[in-house]
Image (tube, rainbow, N blue to C red; front, top):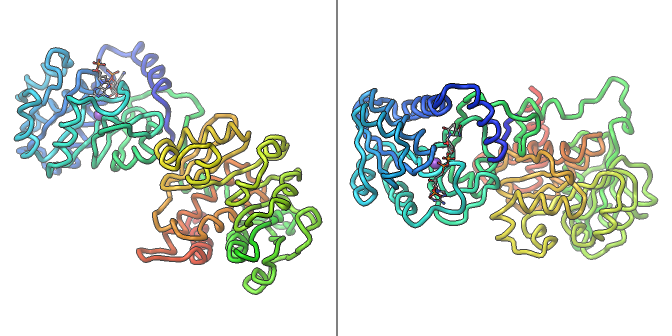
Length: 476
Ligand SMILES: NC(=O)C1=CN([C@@H]2O[C@H](COP(=O)(O)OP(=O)(O)OC[C@H]3O[C@@H](n4cnc5c(N)ncnc54)[C@H](OP(=O)(O)O)[C@@H]3O)[C@@H](O)[C@H]2O)[C@@H](O)CC1
Ligand SMILES: [K+]
């Protein structure tokens, strides 16, 4: 499990730890980890040219102490001081003592241009908003140079708590972050600015529940349903799929294809695309008599390719089993009917659908995904899985949200969402909570997308067919 905590929580943990340690000890831990990561990146420290971009906070302090360590190992280190009068005094002294030099921003051009490595210590968790006008040109200089860029704690200019980028920010190849991941390092658009992320343990004691977590292979393996010796189809879970229309029969086929590979014991299909479903998947139990009279299920998926028929959506929402609401179903669902449900509801919008539900624009949702997914979850009193370049899942209680680490741009293909909804519905039927079903489905689906594509375009049905291979990979 990879965990991320918001700034306020990090600050509290830092205060508690600092009270028990000698002055400056934490900063030394951070600087030592940072210098080690830089040395790994450089390969050979001796003779390398390193430029430090130094703001006036402790983020600049970390950077100066790390620069001093590199200078002691023979690097030529130059610090660009954004605000010479307010530079961390101890850090600057240490750098000078180790043979490093300091210059003002107007002389940064040449140094950055010739550097092998640039450290971004402009601002860390103390920053708000995009970079200020005096700092922004330094980010641009770093981006234009051939040097590797290492962000200290986080790329300056991103919002640590949300992953928003509200102006100019530093683009890093590597981010060395201290104590814990920050949510912004795991969520686009900021995630893209961070490059790869290396965590340096500085001994912070953090609360049990993070703000955001990313499941890893072992976590997902522990959550995947596993049939017991005397399982029958009902014990494994039956998932009902109310999807497809005369116009969009393919959505039904794809949702069923995901559901069949998601661990439920049987898949019941209800809707007008029964013939297409049976032709492809003869093991499906098909009915055209509406969800209410379809027989027993442990979870419903409603909405993919449903067109404009609100009837099945209302019927499904009135049941007392978990419901996954996707695509057209999101538009057709009545807000009060969703809020009134006693069993869990999992909504799976993409950014455009989320924007329509929130009455905002797609760009707003994509720029502030965590805020959007949490807003939707609260508004509908439901668990929400927001699809996209960073898929997020959040519950209605505002607790720990999940971010999916396996996503791939190859999944941006027609019908891929239908496969995901079937897969997640199947996991709901197998008994996973809405948060687990959503995040496990996103994880497996992302991995299946990678397998299916393997460097070349693939269709949504290929993604469904790759689910068993992804599942085995996680299990093994
Ligand atoms: N605490 C600890 O135990 C440990 C903390 N550690 C380190 O401390 C860091 C936090 O340090 P911090 O609190 O000093 O804040 P920091 O991120 O340096 O920023 C403040 C400065 O930025 C400026 N500024 C603000 N916004 C800006 C913008 N948009 N664009 C440009 N500038 C902007 C702001 O200016 P001002 O408003 O004062 O004029 C102020 O000068 C943390 O990220 C980690 O690296 C590690 O050593 C481990 C132990
Ligand atoms: K930084």
